[in-house]
Figure 1 (cartoon, helix red, strand yellow):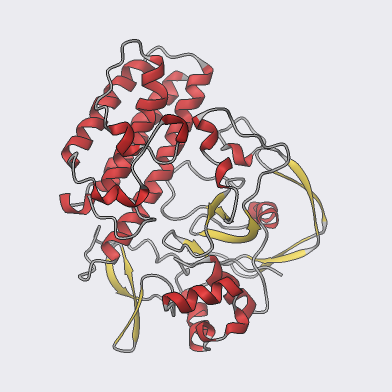
Figure 2 (figure 1 turned 60 degrees about the vertical axis):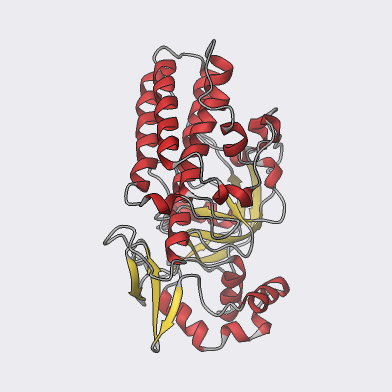
Length: 385
């Protein structure tokens, strides 16, 4: 990306993070109800820390760090950069205040603006572009973490009136037949990608059928009413243990109130739209539903080949592929190498994007990944056979 374009992109991305947080009250910035949710204040500070740590400190002579404690507080998982607070303690960081975090963002933004003015080094430009995509990842986490925080408030407060984000419907019907053959998988263009998308390679696929539609709430209600959560035959063993040890009987954010199903949305608690696309589903639930339907989840390779002819982007779609490196994958040296490679174990790949994904942050080779029980993202189900 050229200097002019990256300056504009930098300011647009940074403003969008703050736009996401605009409806919050000061108290909303701090809670961490569970370990996998980070406080909004932490996201704003961590995405700023990335630019200060990887761009400004090593490349601006005499750069003055905003606060020496911030490296410890707002480093996420980069062991190469030093010690950090435990992930579970992010909600305990009541100080620095939210106001101080916004001041930190302002300070770093001003320093970055000056740094970008005459920047031509292609390696630094590429690292800054990585930082922008990193912040876009945190923008999606901001939305989903805010929803979790407000969705577990007993009053179900409204984030933004009218911002349901789970009300979209399928636009197509039927299914696709993809013929057997050898296909190329992986990123191949001049545009940005993460390192886990590289290593373009060939795979052989048998003929398969894949649905043009994502599973709807009405379809999933049939699974619930048929006793899907009580039939161990439908579940993977770990999934069955998860269901029973956590008392799972419906998707996250669903509430049966006076005999009527409701769900919490960012627009508040609402009656479930049966025709809307299902959301907030774990891999375990997706696999059990597919088993109940006599179908299966597509592999990530099947999904990528079919994606050209699918309407995708409303939900992250679980695949039946473990998150593993492509042929020839190698981690970059230093902290940047910690970005993806060290997480390639015990996680499943999701493809596509969601209604919470930031503009310009999706492509059909994107490999998202989460643990099998996680469902606080806007995840959904597409079936194959």
